[in-house]
Length: 61
Image (cartoon, rainbow, N blue to C red):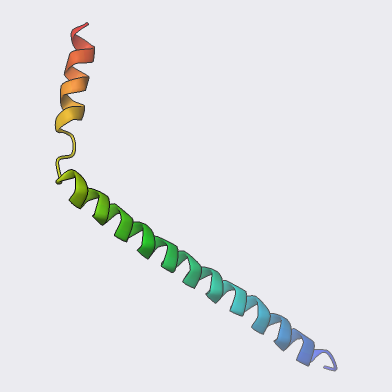
């Protein structure tokens, strides 16, 4: 029972790192989502029109 303080400190440090990492991932994901929205706005929300044309042209071959 003498080392109970060290055990508590170790668990506290580990959980602090886990929560910090989760917060870091949340921040990065939010930033990427903002960049994706910006890109969608800049291209005018026209996905897959050109891709479908390229795929049919390649198969004509």
